Image (cartoon, rainbow, N blue to C red; front, side, top):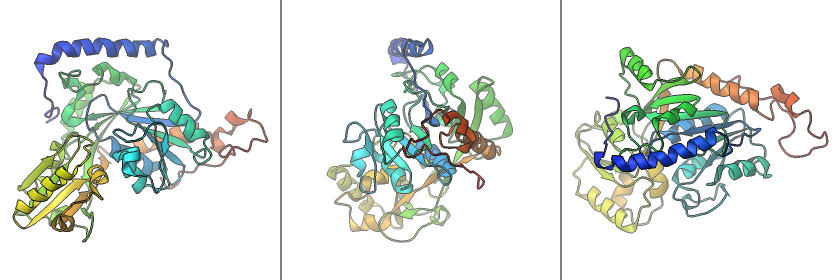
Length: 390
């Protein structure tokens, strides 16, 4: 049921109260205009949450990439959590995972024509993406995990709320997992309840809608996770989840914030799941690899090892993986699916915003009439942005 993954540490509630004072004060400074938020002349779409841990940001950003990439030049800007570099880094084909972090690395590998950059300072990152020669053709910027980064004023602010960790039932850090008070949801233009069970009944949607208590200017959507065919990491052929035998043993290797969801989703295929759970964004060590090898070797046949796309970004290429594990290691790709036939409405909302606000769209040519006629900066020339295929 909704909120079933929430644990409240009641003994820490006094510290949550103190934490909340600081967060509310900071938000008030932005709300009053004492601290400034900057808007940009390029469409900016922010995707984030107010909960510590995974709410499905990466698959939702990838959905937006797929929606837009064939018609406009998309750029993704992330902080690059736990990367080994500093400042602004623009990914290319040779950029390694430690330089930009696992999630940006995953997106660059899946979408090589998309500009993927990391910068803790999102304002500077946007400035670089829109002015540097190699990226100044950017038409739209997707901000990954930037809901609390209020120095940027996005054109569309998307808030993700995990069905199993609904913010209405949670508490502030450290007693709960909220980064800011529940009222922070009021800044969102779009709220998406993610990871919904596929069998939700109409009454449950109505209850959730009422419980979220959104304003009329906010739009609520519901998404679920759709798993694709298992992809071999090193060798072999793809496998459908349906081809997993009930007696097959699964070693599930995860370093994500909420592994309980994927464990729950795999149980219909096999009851024999052995989870090896590491911390979110965990950097695997030689000792970790040895433990994984040993655990897999101990498991009886038939057996298979499964990991997530994000974990594979950190696991792939690690030295020491046994031959047995390499021959049985698969990645489980995931995509989001909209529920209640909401997909087309969501798509048109995003496309309409990008089309209307793009600095390169012929639809907004009049906004650029004041620019010098002899400007030779790449991307200044008007061009039609068409979304006929969508």
